[in-house]
Amino acid sequence: MLGPQADIFLVGFLFDMSKIILKGKKVILRPLSLKDAPRFCKWLNDREMTKFLSVYDAPPPGLKEEKEWIQEAQRTKKDLRLAIDTIDGVHIGTTSLRGIDNPSKRAEFGITIGDKKYWGQGYGTEACKLIVDYGFKKLKLHRIHLTCIVYNIRGKKSYEKVGFKVEGRMREHILRDNAWHDEIHMGLLRSEWQKKKLRSKN
Image (tube, rainbow, N blue to C red; front, side):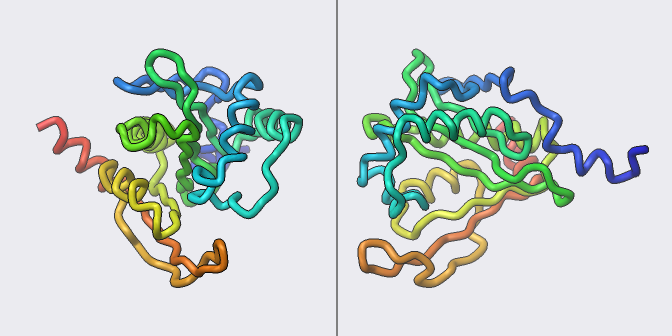
C-alpha cells in the first residue's frame, strides 16, 4: 500500500522521456537519440567547450562509450536528459534535470551548448527556461539548483535571466590547468519561479 508520501517518492516516474517534446521560439528539446553520439564525441573533444564542464580533465569518450551513455540516459528514471535542437532541426547541445527521484522534490540543472556557433545568442537561455518550467509545472519540483565554474560568466548571466540566484561560493574548489577556481552555487525555488511567471504576464 502506498503511504501519504508516495506522491513525493514517485516524482521521478511521472514522465516518459521518450515522449517529451518541449518547444520554444528558438529551440526544441527532444529525447536523446543514438544518432546524437557522434556530435557529443566531437564536442567533448573540444577543450574550449569542455573548460566549462566537470569532464574537462577526463579522457574524451569514444563513440561506443557515448552511445552507452545515451542508452543509460534513456533508461534511467532519476534524470531527465534532453537534446537541444534549433527550431529548424540542428542539434546543438543537451540539457538535464538530474536526481529528481527524491523526497525533497529537488533536482540539479545542467546544460551544454556544444556547437560554439550558437553561443551567446539566447539558445541556452531558452532551453534552460523550457526545462525549468517543465520541472516546476509538470514534475512539481520545489527547488532546482546548479553549479558553475566562476569564469563561466555567460552561463551565470543566462541562469540569472531564468531566475536563478547565487546561494554560495566554494572558494578555490576546482583545480584546472594548474590554477584554482571558485565554484558558484545557484538555486531557484518554486515560489520564485511562480512570481517570475506572474510578472512576465503583466
